[in-house]
Structure formats: C-alpha cells, structure tokens
Length: 319
Image (cartoon, rainbow, N blue to C red):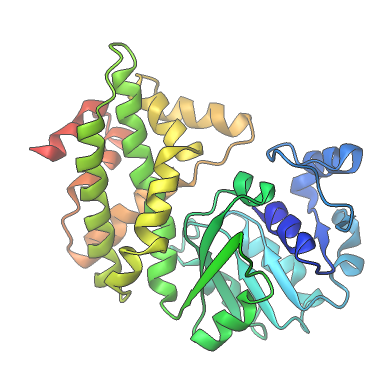
C-alpha cells in the first residue's frame, strides 16, 4: 500500500521518495530491476526516487508528508527508526489496518507515541493497493484528531480517481479497518465450504455480511466511535471490498475448505502474504470481553481459528 500511495502521489505531480527498510530488501531489488513492486500490477512512475535501508537520511530530507507503510506488527519499529529523520514533517499518515500485537493499541496511538512532534492521520475505506496503483476509481477516508488536520493532510492526494472524505472519528476508522478483516475471513470460509459441491452460499453471505456489519457498529460505538463511521466507507465500504477479494478472504476460503488454520497461515506468510485478520480476530474477542459485548459472528470466526471448531459453525450464526 505504501508503494501504491507513492505511485498515486507521483502521478499527482508531487516530489516523491520511496524508502525500503531492511525488511523490504526483496521488493526493493525488484523495484530497482524493473520499476515494479512484486505485489502490484503497474510499474513505478519514473518520477519516484528509490532509496534502500542505509539511505534513510537522504530519502527523508525535506519530507513534508510521511506515508507509513508498515503493517501493524512493524509499526512501532518503523516509527522508532524514522523518528530522528522526520521531525520537521507536517504530518505522518498511517495506512496500516490492525492493532499492535501485545499492547492492543491503535496505529494512531503507536505512531503518536513515537513521533511525538508530528500529527498522525489514519487512512480507512475501500482502497485496494492494486487498484490504487492502477489509477482505478477509489474512495478513502482520512481521519485525524481534527477535521482540519485530516483535510490538510489529504488534499494533496485528493483527485477524481482517489476521492477522499475526512473525519475526526479516529477510533471509528481504525476499529473498522481492523474488524473488516475478521469479517472477510468468515465470508471467505463460505467460499471454501462451497467448493466440494459448487454451492455459492449467496444468501448466507448476504445475511452474514449484514450481521458482521452490525457487530462492527456495536463495537465501534461501545469503544467511543460513531455509528455513522461504521455504516459508511470506513466500515461497510471497506468490509465489502475486503470480503470480495484479498488475503484475508483467501485465508478464510482455505480454512473453510478444510485446511488447518495455523498451517494455512504459515504457508501464506511464507509466500509473503500478511493476514492481519488472524490477530484481529483475537483483538475483537478481547475487546468484546472487556466491553461485555455479544458478537456472535466474530465469536464464530474465533472458534474456528483458535478453538478447533468446524468452519460450518459460521453458518450457526444464522440460527
């Protein structure tokens, strides 16, 4: 996603540098060889300048807006590494979707704790990196502590092909971005269950999609976010696009087809695919317990992934 945003910014006419940490060595090698990220369909615009792990000072020199492209596992280490180099940046934008493992902190809290002098903006909404990289029509939600800060950060990226809305509901946007991955895993299970017989479970998908959406509204509201956020682009919009395709839905499909959850996760990670919805399933269960919420759909996904339940348990939520 970080690379896709860089591509969009370059097409917008901005001066863009793309910095790869040591964890991105293989992707950087491919980018330098043929200007193409291994997970994206389009080549990098010629205007984007590439930098490697040892070139952070040069890559960040004069940066006004910093896009933070790590996943939730690497967010804090990324922030600590770049902190001395981006003290003059006007804003830092997080594109990660999940909570920090262990602490359960949202990304704005993680980055805000490390980049203490830089306002943090969190990105949500239905935005697949592949389509953003291609310049296909996309809508997003940029959230900050104030609407003014969110709008000021987002306007340099706002175009007819990447249309942005702004909100100060940071809690709502970040929890929606986390929970939609869990919803996608469960709906993917239906694809896996239907493989042997060719069943599509279209009716069940629609019903469970709706159930998952209402549970997202419940948890967001109980956590201090707003229902309108969960019913909008950040919630239902992102839930829909993630349930139609992507890593979390694929993981759910494989589990639904009978593959072991742990082994499936290891296999996908070995292929370079991060499935953040697995950790997010644990996070939702923890938050629901702390808030005394009954979330049957999300609880069913948790039982399948961690308690040895059969994937067909997801259908019991309809009863």
